[in-house]
Length: 585
Image (cartoon, rainbow, N blue to C red; front, side, top):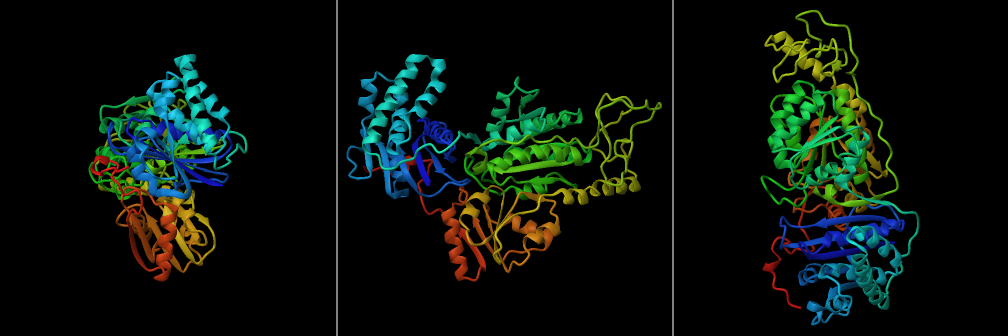
């Protein structure tokens, strides 16, 4: 069973709330659910949509077509009607749909239902929800219970009115029932991508987070703020991104597990401080939620175009680790693991997500606890230092990792500056000392490569379909029959581990959500592996499984050679300015 429902409405009309409620309802019935929002950079006006995909099997991608479309306003009907499946149904408000001559449209008497029950207009989405559940014969009790939980604080009268109008919609849906989706198992959790990253960080002992709001990283900041008081956690909404990264560096220097986050534009302001953290070997995790660029770009749409920005952040040469979770559950694990890696190797560690992963929702049964590894940190007092002596904070060790006492530890006195330094932390411009410290820091790379995650491999075909980060979901789903390879550890790459994933491969096709094949270049730089074909998409949307499947058919005819640049082939209306399209109903 694979079923999709899309809610379309103007900004402020509740498309996201309605969609998320649907996701929770089916998750509580034991289904795997994937929720996918789209919206322009507008608080009011513009068009919003939220697709809920339901399956008995794990899923991590939206689809192009919908079995049910909930059209809250005329734009929703116009924008999405062409994505309806052959046997699909559109639920529309009678106030604008009365003239539509379409047998697939159910015209809901929203105004009369609200009037009958003396209900507020804000409750109209409950009618849509009830009708949807009736159409698929899903138990109304699930919605009734969720309404009770959601509105209990507003009083029983509000709860009762919401239940009544939802029930009225449910009865209409039952009259037109077309599918039978009944609960199949134990409830699952339904969570967003940034929330999963936040939970992973908390599980791994996060103690400090600082950030300045910037879509699509903002919801991570909001989530962590909501957890203050429930965890031993400090969260700071900084005055800007420069302050945010420096506050996180200060917290990490003091011994707290610290993280900061932003999107590409905000991270551009952070880059100087990245170099400071690297030179002073202060462990720091930077959560980067990509969106389209350059500059403001399209702030609420998605892209994988910040890889080289991260790879080259700050001047000079230094090691860093770059991770790219391939799905929401992996974002939980890798964000937590990033804190371990940062403290183990005393380097900046980047977690690269994007709008698609950060703001989508998915289901899970349970999340494992993440073990905490703090590396060579010293928290206990040592022997008192002699006068004028400093601890060898940057000791030239065999593995390149030096002991790290936190401030206040007896015998651990040292300084941390942006200047090159000797082993005892005093600044220096001695040529020999400079080379020794650079060599020491670079010596960590072999250990990083040993610990690096090998590529995710599925299948044994001689034709390899490759991607990285969040695009794993749609690319893997759309490339059945091929060897599928996805990277979640982007840098530094272990050449042997990577080449093993490509053993027996004769052709390589790389799918990337950018215009220049950034990861394909990094892969070639690090391993010598070069793709035979590239499929690039940079419209502001991620890949869809159907697009991946079509692209591979085209490439097969070309012996998997060349380059494809995909255009959007459905819902091509501009969400930012629906008023440009004359809606004729």
